[in-house]
Image 1 (cartoon, rainbow, N blue to C red):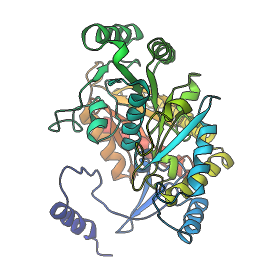
Image 2 (tube, helix red, strand yellow):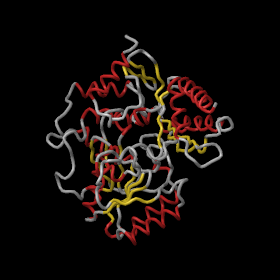
Image 3 (tube, helix red, strand yellow):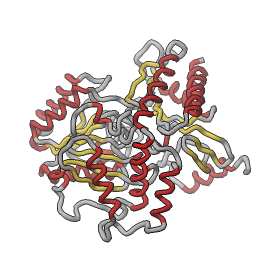
Image 4 (tube, rainbow, N blue to C red):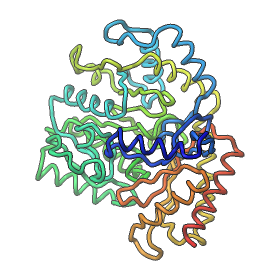
Length: 425
């Protein structure tokens, strides 16, 4: 391979694609296996991004590849709404059974997380005959226009794209950055100043905010949201797009809280890299839209469904949620061990394998985005792919495949140590 192949591709990318599709890497993928990725020049990387939390079962898991090959021999598309197929129904049955709560549920399949969010809001509005939606600061729910209206982060997601959908309201997120009392006060202020609760169709939240900085919602806040929604007939929507499928040490993050949402959105690692999402929820709510009100040409694609069935088998057989919990604990121990050498470390948080480290200027509460980028760059120099996040861009998140071999994970931990030490030097 020509050593300048990545540079040539970067030049072609700049000429052919718009700057709005932001790209982190200056190298281009050639092939991948489990937790490792090789670029077009043959360099090996350890993948701690996982396509942004999509590869919980790793790249090209043999069972998933086999399921895709088998489906490819049968058919790739009919549009479920024209000629349906059994795989859609059986996956819906599995998701209905797997998600929290023993009540009657139904599932509709879509293609992307944003699509799942948009349809969850449509379902809630159809059920309640109301229009208002409450979301939270720091939330990320997607890039389509209504989803980005719900998103609680301006740069780069909302800047220049307004006006946004009406009757979307934001409250502080009840985590380490806002007390539950502050959140209650803000929501009750919304009810007094902006929209009466009898016009609110849904409250949507992430159990652990993804793009917002891996902020874990307070247990008491989840209980309060459930009680608030019950009191006012509001649909409670849990966005499990990034937290689902084993990432937090449970199959779904809501299992940590013992509270059952009315609707749940699922995507990302559901189909191991193929576009598939779902809205699963109470049968009577899911049935609110009339026939034809939900769907999409590619919604519930048969190839993606075949992958999802294999993902569910792999998750159970290899006990990946439990493995994620163990690896997440090991990662936290490594990060805590660096505190004395890296004074920029302000917080280490997360559930299971959904772990992040936040950086501030030493001895202050001032977010340090420059140091965060430096850690990311030092890791990339050592061939470890990391992602940043957070409203202040001062958080590094770790999204390794749950299937990562112990030896590769240990190698990555050495790189994490070396990168943070180099950045702090």
